[in-house]
Image (cartoon, helix red, strand yellow):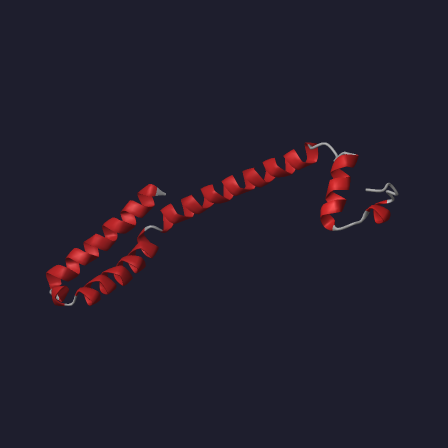
Length: 104
C-alpha cells in the first residue's frame, strides 16, 4: 500500500512540474487542481494492476478473519446460568419473568 501511495504522489508531482513548466505557474489553484485531476486519471489507468492486487489481498485478509471469528464462535462454550441471568437483567427482563421468585 505504501508503494501505491508513493507512486500516486510521484505521478501528482510529475504533473505539477509539467504544468508548471507549461506556464500555469501564475495561478497556483489552477496548477494544483489541474495536476490533481490529471494525476487521478493517470493513476486510475496506470496503477490498475497494483490496485487490483491490493484489493485481492484485503479481501483475503477479511475472509480469513471472518472464518477465524466464526470458528472461534463455534468452539466457544455455552453461556452459564449466571451469564444468562446477567444478560436477562441487562435486557430488562425482571426476576418474575425469568422464573426467579427470590426477593432482592
